[in-house]
Every structure is written in C-alpha cells, then in structure tokens.
Length: 80
Image 1: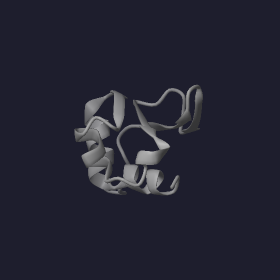
Image 2: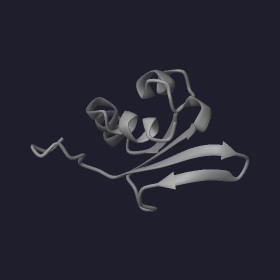
Image 3: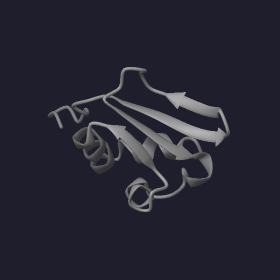
C-alpha cells in the first residue's frame, strides 16, 4: 500500500442481485474482480471470502491489500 493509503491496484466489485442482474462498481480493466451476492454484503468481507461467499478473480495481492485496508468493507457496506 502506498503512503497515501491508496491501493497498489484496481478493484471492480460485482454485487449480484439475481441471475444476470448485478451492480458493477469499478473499472472494467481492474486487477481484481470481487463478486458477492447482495444478501452477503453485510458480512465481514474477509470472513465471506474464507466461507466462499465472496469470490475473487485476478491478482491475489491486490485482493488481500484491499481486504486489509478496509476498502472492500466500505464499498460493500454501502450496498446494504
């Protein structure tokens, strides 16, 4: 993580509302894409990841950095 508190990579969030219906937040060319059902957005993101409810594709280092910084939780809590 940089001194400014920014992530070293980009993250796209996909909050699934239903089959073929999702809210997309972030750039299409993101380093990591996080997908989670809307019903699980209130969970702690790290726990949801360990339980397999939060899925991630892409750079694992960027994912862990985003989880550790609280960035993932902030975005997902806004969707509740």
